[in-house]
Amino acid sequence: MRDEIGKALKEALKTLGASKAAFALERSDTFEHGDYATNAALIAAKILKKNPKEVAEALKKELEGKIEGVRKIEVAGAGFINFFLSDQVLNKTLRDIISAGDTWGSAPKIKERWLIEHTSPNPNKAMHIGHLRNNITGMAIANIAEFRGVEVIRDCIDNNRGIAIAKLMWGYVKFAHRGGTPIEDISYWHEHQGEWQTPEEMDMRPDRFVDALYVQGSEDFEHSLDVEKKVRQMVVDWEHKEKIVWELWEKVLAYSYAGQRMTLGRLGNKWDRVWHEHEHYQEGKNLVEDGLRKGVFKKLEDGAVLTNLAAYNLPDTIVMKSDGTSLYITQDIALTRLKRDTYHPDRLFWVIGPEQTLALKQVFAVCEQLGIGKYTDYTHISYGYMSLKGEAKMSSRKGNVLFIDDLIDQVKESVKDLLKEAELPASKIETIAEEVAVGAVKFGILKVGRNSSIVFDVERATDLHGDTGPYVQYAHTRTCSLLKHAEGKGMKSEVIEDAEANEVVRLLAHFPNVVERSNSELEPHYIATYLLELASLFSRWYADVHILDDASDRGHKIAIVDAVRITLGNGLRLLGIPAPEEM
Image 1 (cartoon, rainbow, N blue to C red):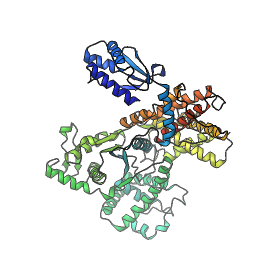
Image 2: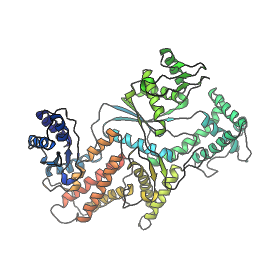
Image 3: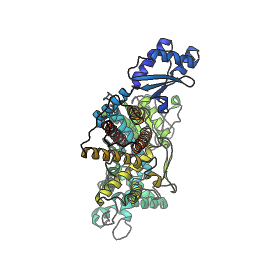
Image 4: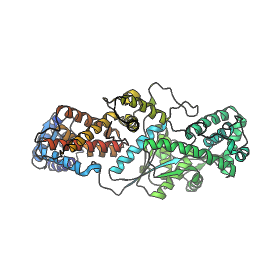
């Protein structure tokens, strides 16, 4: 209905001579003020140089009786116009929801392809909560875009080479020998690999095993110039593809990847493509040479190569060091071209923290200068910082981070405490606790505006009566329980076309608009906020009304429950949150 009202408003404004008025048409702030409200009269009044209320009355007169499904139009305040939908239209929405099911709120496929890079964890350490918001935000945005008809390719970059990985390799060789003797000879390791510890015998997850060794390797690197020299030589040997170094490299990365899969599996992560840095990092040097020939870059006296970004009002940056080695920006430019050549996307997105804002702007600008797409093709999806209530600032290098799995497990234990009284098998409690814990963590992050910082509170996140994921999940399980009881009693849903549409039905009608807004603004929190409102409104209605009674509108009430179930379930899944049927 929003589109129909919008079209009618444009025609009415054209008739009044204010066709250029850029108005907003949004859901009314309260149902007392209708289902939709617009500021069209206030905007048009400036163009027509008339009183806003006078223009609003003129628009109302022009619109009345011309929008099928709108039962009333009223002027409010200084010139706002409110639209009230008819019960028939709202009740038809119930039929549409039940008919659409899992596709309710979606849009037809469009000819647009998005490439969304998210998460990209470093393989030299276990995933900590610094990666968490990236993953949850990126996955939600990708889910929402796909739901609205965009072809989405989810990708990540595996930074699997360089000095950080060499520190891990050093830490493994020197500190993981089963006899406890520090070993610095890689050849000895190669010939006696069976003497080295494994995560299994240490009773550690493979990524935690790697993480601990990376910390040890980093500390050794920092405290000894001799060690630093050897680790840097390891990077050189790797680039020369020395067989033993590559075998060591593959060994430690295999441990890391195994641990990452465990964490990402709990989060429901999805990637359609993983780009491995070692496969393309050298291509950046060719692009720098191309840029020098085109006059995009300039070579400094010491041989380093510098950008020229004055036209973009950006500071310049080095794209190649004086010794001919590349930097992250060089590799990012090469990867961007590889992405475009491989998938030919219409838009490319990077879900990365705010500390990378300048670096990404420089990448986008240089890409445009080199003819690798337009600056406007590229979007940085930033997000605020996240910390845990009561925790100090963390550093993966120092080893004082909070791992993602530890946070989920901590929340999971809180959920299990809430389920102590439930008469359910232990296996069922375990499943429910996992789903609710993941839901609590994800919702606690996604309910906040993307660029706002978060202090995550475990106790608040698991509150079944607060603005939490478990609260929404519980509302969903309640709808499932009601429908199961209704089915057991042979009661069926039946929409009554002329029934008075209550506020639950009126709110349900807005779900597609909320999803579209989340997609256009890349802001999942609109969906999270809507789900909280729907769960709250449904709970109040459920408390006030006897649903499975013998009244003539029983079937209609069951239909409302089913529509709420579908809408809550679809919304939760868009956010990457499980929608359990029992709790």
